[in-house]
Image 1: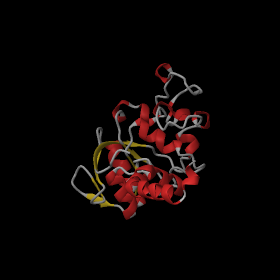
Image 2 (image 1 turned 30 degrees about the vertical axis):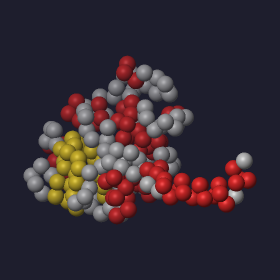
Image 3 (image 1 turned 45 degrees about the horizontal axis):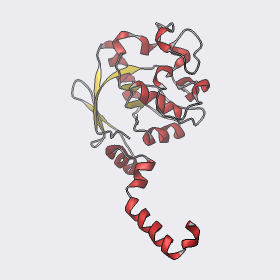
Image 4 (image 1 turned 30 degrees about the horizontal axis):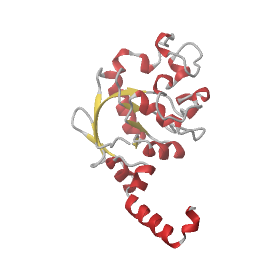
Length: 212
């Protein structure tokens, strides 16, 4: 998993509340478990004017010009600004996979659905909870200023605005440690690889019949 330390990123404003995981990545794209290749189908039903299918080449599909991610000023955005209860609905882990594959590294919202929030940390995506009034300010400034970017510092737990002012956010210390060091569940387990190997060697000696 790619570590998350600091990010200077362009902001894309998705001004919708209760965005569910079926909107983030529709159900027909859930057949793959490779964690990659979902970016072109992120927000598929909002992003395109036709119906998307798995394996389809999205480069020639008709785009919805009114959808925020299709607007030229937000191309290359790495920070998604959203409203309350982002990621609600089913618990599909494909939702953070799609967001990350598109290029987002952080999401800022007043609140997140619990399972989606947990899945973000497991996949190197930083969900940041800020007060509603802070999010309102970020929406207003993003819309008013083309090229609006923020600086996110996970170690300091700050979001720094272009004028130098900052918001602080809370994050669980263990989740923070994992993101800073790029450790998912597999990475955490591999930290104990010497202990695991020593245990397996000892068990072979104690109960060799189990390994026949």
